[in-house]
Length: 195
Length: 195
DNA sequence: TTTGGCATGTAATCCGTTACATGATTAG
DNA sequence: CTAATCATGTAACGGATTACATGCCAAA
Image 1 (cartoon, chains in turn yellow, purple, green, cyan):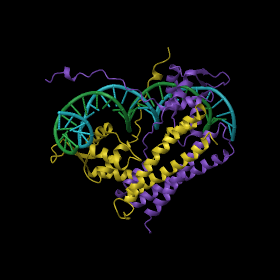
Image 2 (tube, rainbow over the protein chains, first blue to last red; image 1 turned 90 degrees about the vertical axis):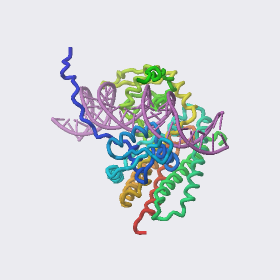
Image 3 (tube, each protein chain N blue to C red; image 1 turned 45 degrees about the vertical axis):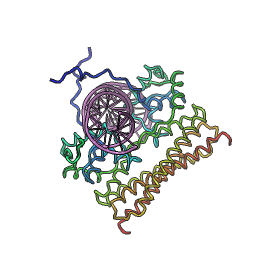
Image 4 (cartoon, rainbow over the protein chains, first blue to last red; image 1 turned 120 degrees about the vertical axis):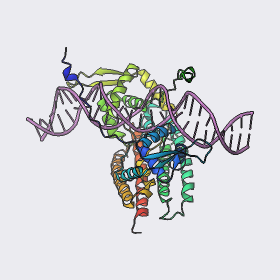
């Protein structure tokens, strides 16, 4: 028998938790005013969906944990007849948010399934690829239309407006969508069997 | 006491597994020839890193599972003195890959931390945002340079070349990087305190 | 001889999604 | 009345990352 002692696992050095970005998204939204979990979800879906997402099933447990950590406080909204748990950011939460905002941005590696399928294109019918790219183009085009509409609405917002940052992120979405569409057109021309 | 019976959880309907895209990435790469786990990791890092990623710590267990599922076979490379487990795609694996390639692309929602920080820009010093955007620009610019180099090398690849799909994905990266840089310049001008 | 690359794997943990479960309120 | 929306939460699971652990081989 091999000596078991040498196999004994040492106590693990606990690594610095990579810190869920969900927490910071929540802190950032709550920094503009109290909100319920449901509100947060809605706001994510309506304003920043083109570059961020959160699922309700994650939001609620995270809000609870953040309450325990003293980053937010919970109060049950009395004004509403309906059950509503409203969260407020605490000074500690605000400090945490500000500290995070100063930290360098960590880039998460992308996973664009459309490109993965294109990359493996040799293993399928070109018509399949064309269909995928066309569908992707349609999605991005409708997204572009929506973003341009919003961007147009925000065109008048001045430099000091609180909406300027929203406008910047919308502009980023417009650029990205246009680029995606341009690539789709290039790819579709290249894949076109008639040429 | 509340009746426990009513609380008894029913057997859960097993949902269709969302099916790890890692498996398909592996199948696609192995469809071009046998590779070791290490090879796959290298190939991901060198050729498709701008739109896909895999970690070794995930690759190995997945390869094992795929072996058990009959999608790949494992053989220990004898040519090499060094221990090398080489995987080959099986006919079943090829069928699985081809079926997946035909399925509609599922879009995974993006998470661009840089935009999240910009969106929360009101809660920090503008100089912080400027630094983040500038750093992001630099990253994307060097990525663009690399992609353009590769794209240039592939310029001569004809329509029937096996490299045409690589070229298409590289082109996508070039478009995306250029758009990101253009946005950064816009944002930097907008955030510039001197104007 | 030592550093770095090759090479495989496990352990711990976490982040997050989907589905389940429940119920009130409001608009048509 | 009924469907949609509001609203909160749990359960189960799975995908993936990072750190740990180990060791060979080649080159400087």
